[in-house]
Image 1 (cartoon, rainbow, N blue to C red):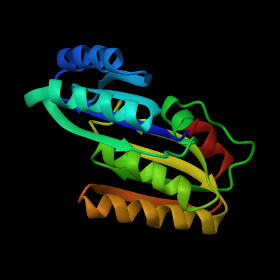
Image 2: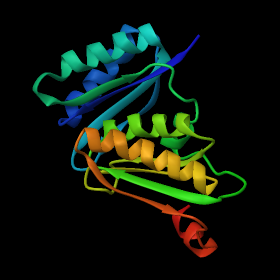
Image 3: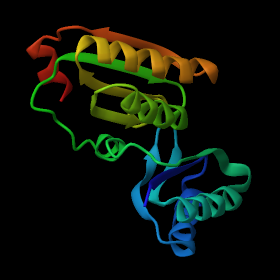
Image 4: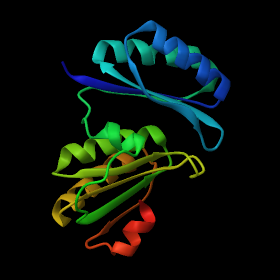
Length: 182
């Protein structure tokens, strides 16, 4: 069974919480996160089989009404996306460091999935809106060539949507930098 991820982003926290409840009641999905994010928005991210995620996100989008910012569904999502969202990743070794930043939370989830599928990479953190004024960023590691491939993949997605802020590759990050990041 392939796993899908779905996300609905709201401009209203109250409507987001209400819709999250209904999204869980309509189908067998698991909440990855449901929380307020800057600047005063609310996101719900669920995972499950493709049909369940489609049903859940469909209900969330319909209930959002005028409070809908965006919604996405990624079928066959990379399993590495989940720990990155919850911040539960720390590889044994950090080689090169890739950082990509977007104005959109949904775009960054799509880009992170594509980046992780593009090369042999390990996620570090997928930060969605908190403390970022509504922006998002994704950090990941691998050898320099893999990180460069990941960055180009992510940039193409974010540029296509007109939502890329910046992207950088650090070939050999300082240990002192890394300790301040994680």
